[in-house]
Length: 236
Ligand SMILES: [Zn+2]
Image (cartoon, rainbow, N blue to C red; front, side):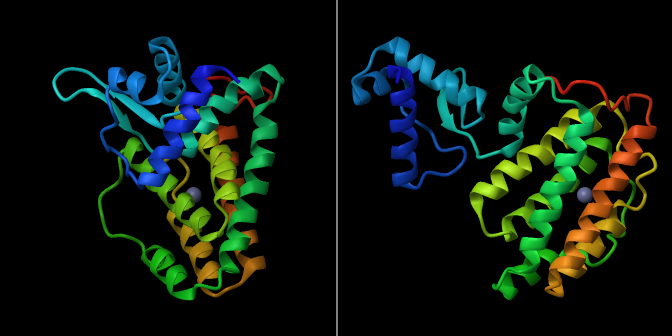
Protein backbone atom coordinates (compact mmCIF):
# COMPACT_ATOMS: atom_id res chain seq x y z
CA UNK A 1 0.00 0.00 0.00
CA UNK A 2 1.29 3.47 -0.85
CA UNK A 3 2.31 5.73 2.05
CA UNK A 4 -0.39 8.25 1.04
CA UNK A 5 -3.09 5.57 1.31
CA UNK A 6 -1.81 4.42 4.70
CA UNK A 7 -1.87 8.02 5.87
CA UNK A 8 -5.45 8.49 4.59
CA UNK A 9 -6.59 5.35 6.41
CA UNK A 10 -4.93 6.39 9.67
CA UNK A 11 -6.39 9.90 9.46
CA UNK A 12 -9.92 8.50 8.95
CA UNK A 13 -9.34 6.06 11.81
CA UNK A 14 -8.39 8.93 14.14
CA UNK A 15 -11.37 11.02 12.99
CA UNK A 16 -13.77 8.15 13.73
CA UNK A 17 -12.18 7.46 17.13
CA UNK A 18 -12.36 11.12 18.11
CA UNK A 19 -15.99 11.31 16.95
CA UNK A 20 -15.43 14.42 14.80
CA UNK A 21 -18.36 15.79 12.80
CA UNK A 22 -18.75 17.45 9.41
CA UNK A 23 -16.92 20.77 9.25
CA UNK A 24 -14.49 19.92 12.07
CA UNK A 25 -11.10 21.49 11.56
CA UNK A 26 -8.29 19.01 10.92
CA UNK A 27 -4.59 19.65 11.61
CA UNK A 28 -2.66 21.66 9.04
CA UNK A 29 -0.60 19.92 6.41
CA UNK A 30 2.59 20.65 8.38
CA UNK A 31 1.06 19.29 11.59
CA UNK A 32 -0.11 16.16 9.77
CA UNK A 33 3.42 15.60 8.42
CA UNK A 34 4.66 15.78 12.02
CA UNK A 35 1.84 13.73 13.62
CA UNK A 36 1.80 10.89 11.13
CA UNK A 37 5.54 10.80 10.43
CA UNK A 38 5.19 10.72 6.67
CA UNK A 39 6.45 12.95 3.88
CA UNK A 40 4.74 16.17 2.82
CA UNK A 41 4.07 14.57 -0.57
CA UNK A 42 2.33 11.58 1.02
CA UNK A 43 0.17 13.89 3.17
CA UNK A 44 -0.75 15.95 0.12
CA UNK A 45 -1.59 12.89 -1.95
CA UNK A 46 -3.59 11.40 0.92
CA UNK A 47 -5.55 14.62 1.45
CA UNK A 48 -6.20 14.86 -2.28
CA UNK A 49 -7.56 11.31 -2.25
CA UNK A 50 -9.94 12.24 0.56
CA UNK A 51 -10.83 15.54 -1.10
CA UNK A 52 -11.91 13.85 -4.34
CA UNK A 53 -14.15 11.62 -2.21
CA UNK A 54 -15.60 14.68 -0.47
CA UNK A 55 -14.49 13.25 2.90
CA UNK A 56 -12.18 16.22 3.39
CA UNK A 57 -12.63 19.78 2.13
CA UNK A 58 -9.70 22.16 1.68
CA UNK A 59 -10.05 25.81 2.68
CA UNK A 60 -7.81 28.74 1.81
CA UNK A 61 -6.83 31.83 3.74
CA UNK A 62 -6.93 32.63 7.44
CA UNK A 63 -8.36 29.71 9.40
CA UNK A 64 -7.94 27.65 6.24
CA UNK A 65 -6.64 24.13 5.85
CA UNK A 66 -8.35 20.77 5.78
CA UNK A 67 -11.79 20.20 7.32
CA UNK A 68 -13.85 17.10 7.68
CA UNK A 69 -16.35 16.68 4.83
CA UNK A 70 -19.24 14.23 4.93
CA UNK A 71 -20.16 10.73 3.88
CA UNK A 72 -22.02 11.63 0.71
CA UNK A 73 -22.97 8.66 -1.49
CA UNK A 74 -23.14 11.19 -4.34
CA UNK A 75 -19.36 11.46 -4.29
CA UNK A 76 -19.00 7.69 -4.30
CA UNK A 77 -21.41 7.59 -7.23
CA UNK A 78 -19.46 10.26 -9.06
CA UNK A 79 -16.25 8.27 -8.62
CA UNK A 80 -18.06 5.13 -9.75
CA UNK A 81 -19.02 6.77 -13.05
CA UNK A 82 -15.37 6.42 -14.14
CA UNK A 83 -15.61 2.66 -13.54
CA UNK A 84 -19.00 2.43 -15.21
CA UNK A 85 -17.89 4.45 -18.22
CA UNK A 86 -14.76 2.35 -18.77
CA UNK A 87 -16.86 -0.81 -18.40
CA UNK A 88 -19.16 0.56 -21.12
CA UNK A 89 -22.23 0.65 -18.83
CA UNK A 90 -25.28 2.38 -20.32
CA UNK A 91 -28.08 4.52 -18.95
CA UNK A 92 -30.45 1.58 -19.45
CA UNK A 93 -28.33 -0.48 -17.06
CA UNK A 94 -28.31 2.39 -14.59
CA UNK A 95 -32.13 2.57 -14.70
CA UNK A 96 -32.41 -1.16 -14.07
CA UNK A 97 -29.97 -0.91 -11.15
CA UNK A 98 -31.80 2.12 -9.76
CA UNK A 99 -35.16 0.32 -9.59
CA UNK A 100 -33.56 -2.75 -7.99
CA UNK A 101 -31.62 -0.68 -5.44
CA UNK A 102 -34.44 1.65 -4.39
CA UNK A 103 -37.03 -1.13 -4.20
CA UNK A 104 -34.73 -3.15 -1.92
CA UNK A 105 -34.12 -0.18 0.38
CA UNK A 106 -37.87 0.56 0.63
CA UNK A 107 -38.65 -3.08 1.38
CA UNK A 108 -36.06 -3.21 4.16
CA UNK A 109 -37.26 0.11 5.60
CA UNK A 110 -40.78 -1.30 5.92
CA UNK A 111 -39.30 -4.17 7.96
CA UNK A 112 -37.46 -1.82 10.33
CA UNK A 113 -38.44 -2.90 13.87
CA UNK A 114 -37.86 0.57 15.33
CA UNK A 115 -41.35 1.86 14.57
CA UNK A 116 -40.82 5.14 16.42
CA UNK A 117 -37.87 5.95 14.14
CA UNK A 118 -39.94 4.96 11.09
CA UNK A 119 -42.78 7.26 12.18
CA UNK A 120 -40.45 10.19 12.85
CA UNK A 121 -38.77 9.81 9.45
CA UNK A 122 -41.80 9.05 7.27
CA UNK A 123 -44.48 11.11 9.04
CA UNK A 124 -43.53 14.41 7.38
CA UNK A 125 -43.99 12.82 3.94
CA UNK A 126 -47.63 11.87 4.45
CA UNK A 127 -48.94 15.29 3.48
CA UNK A 128 -48.46 17.57 0.54
CA UNK A 129 -46.55 20.62 1.70
CA UNK A 130 -48.45 23.80 0.87
CA UNK A 131 -45.93 25.99 -0.92
CA UNK A 132 -44.83 27.57 -4.16
CA UNK A 133 -43.15 25.54 -6.85
CA UNK A 134 -39.61 24.50 -5.98
CA UNK A 135 -36.56 25.58 -7.92
CA UNK A 136 -34.83 22.76 -9.76
CA UNK A 137 -31.92 22.80 -7.27
CA UNK A 138 -34.27 22.66 -4.26
CA UNK A 139 -36.26 19.95 -5.93
CA UNK A 140 -33.14 17.81 -6.33
CA UNK A 141 -32.17 18.40 -2.68
CA UNK A 142 -35.65 17.44 -1.41
CA UNK A 143 -35.88 14.42 -3.64
CA UNK A 144 -32.42 13.24 -2.58
CA UNK A 145 -33.32 13.73 1.09
CA UNK A 146 -36.43 11.60 0.87
CA UNK A 147 -34.49 8.72 -0.66
CA UNK A 148 -31.65 9.13 1.85
CA UNK A 149 -34.23 8.96 4.65
CA UNK A 150 -35.71 5.72 3.32
CA UNK A 151 -32.19 4.32 2.86
CA UNK A 152 -31.25 5.19 6.45
CA UNK A 153 -34.26 3.21 7.69
CA UNK A 154 -33.02 0.14 5.78
CA UNK A 155 -30.74 -0.47 8.74
CA UNK A 156 -27.49 -1.32 6.96
CA UNK A 157 -24.94 1.39 6.25
CA UNK A 158 -23.12 -0.68 3.62
CA UNK A 159 -26.31 -1.17 1.60
CA UNK A 160 -27.45 2.37 2.27
CA UNK A 161 -24.22 4.02 1.05
CA UNK A 162 -23.63 1.78 -1.95
CA UNK A 163 -27.24 1.71 -3.14
CA UNK A 164 -27.72 5.46 -2.61
CA UNK A 165 -24.65 6.05 -4.77
CA UNK A 166 -26.64 4.52 -7.65
CA UNK A 167 -29.60 6.80 -6.85
CA UNK A 168 -27.30 9.80 -6.76
CA UNK A 169 -25.73 8.99 -10.11
CA UNK A 170 -29.25 9.06 -11.50
CA UNK A 171 -30.36 12.20 -9.66
CA UNK A 172 -27.26 14.30 -10.18
CA UNK A 173 -25.86 12.80 -13.30
CA UNK A 174 -28.88 12.02 -15.42
CA UNK A 175 -31.58 14.36 -14.13
CA UNK A 176 -29.19 17.29 -14.28
CA UNK A 177 -29.42 17.21 -18.06
CA UNK A 178 -33.21 17.53 -18.05
CA UNK A 179 -35.66 19.36 -15.81
CA UNK A 180 -36.83 16.80 -13.27
CA UNK A 181 -39.92 18.87 -12.44
CA UNK A 182 -41.36 18.73 -15.95
CA UNK A 183 -43.93 15.95 -16.09
CA UNK A 184 -43.06 14.75 -12.62
CA UNK A 185 -46.02 16.37 -10.87
CA UNK A 186 -46.75 13.07 -9.19
CA UNK A 187 -43.43 12.91 -7.37
CA UNK A 188 -44.70 14.05 -3.99
CA UNK A 189 -47.68 11.75 -4.32
CA UNK A 190 -45.28 8.88 -5.15
CA UNK A 191 -43.23 9.68 -2.05
CA UNK A 192 -46.40 9.71 0.05
CA UNK A 193 -47.35 6.23 -1.21
CA UNK A 194 -43.88 4.91 -0.33
CA UNK A 195 -44.03 6.58 3.10
CA UNK A 196 -47.48 5.07 3.78
CA UNK A 197 -46.32 1.54 2.93
CA UNK A 198 -43.13 1.89 5.00
CA UNK A 199 -45.19 3.24 7.91
CA UNK A 200 -47.70 0.41 7.57
CA UNK A 201 -44.84 -2.11 7.80
CA UNK A 202 -45.79 -3.42 4.36
CA UNK A 203 -42.54 -4.58 2.64
CA UNK A 204 -44.21 -5.67 -0.61
CA UNK A 205 -46.23 -2.46 -0.85
CA UNK A 206 -43.13 -0.36 -0.15
CA UNK A 207 -41.09 -2.24 -2.74
CA UNK A 208 -43.80 -1.84 -5.39
CA UNK A 209 -44.51 1.83 -4.64
CA UNK A 210 -40.82 2.67 -4.85
CA UNK A 211 -40.30 0.69 -8.06
CA UNK A 212 -43.31 2.45 -9.64
CA UNK A 213 -41.93 5.82 -8.56
CA UNK A 214 -38.50 5.16 -10.11
CA UNK A 215 -40.15 3.84 -13.25
CA UNK A 216 -42.06 7.11 -13.61
CA UNK A 217 -38.87 9.14 -13.16
CA UNK A 218 -37.10 7.06 -15.76
CA UNK A 219 -39.99 7.39 -18.21
CA UNK A 220 -39.89 11.15 -17.67
CA UNK A 221 -36.20 11.13 -18.48
CA UNK A 222 -36.71 9.00 -21.59
CA UNK A 223 -39.31 11.48 -22.86
CA UNK A 224 -36.91 14.39 -22.39
CA UNK A 225 -34.68 15.43 -25.25
CA UNK A 226 -31.55 14.09 -23.56
CA UNK A 227 -33.03 10.74 -22.78
CA UNK A 228 -30.78 8.55 -24.92
CA UNK A 229 -30.80 5.43 -22.82
CA UNK A 230 -28.09 3.65 -24.82
CA UNK A 231 -25.69 6.44 -23.92
CA UNK A 232 -22.70 5.59 -21.73
CA UNK A 233 -22.61 6.75 -18.14
CA UNK A 234 -19.85 9.34 -17.82
CA UNK A 235 -18.16 11.59 -15.27
CA UNK A 236 -19.68 15.07 -15.03
ZN1 LIG B 1 -38.24 10.22 -5.31
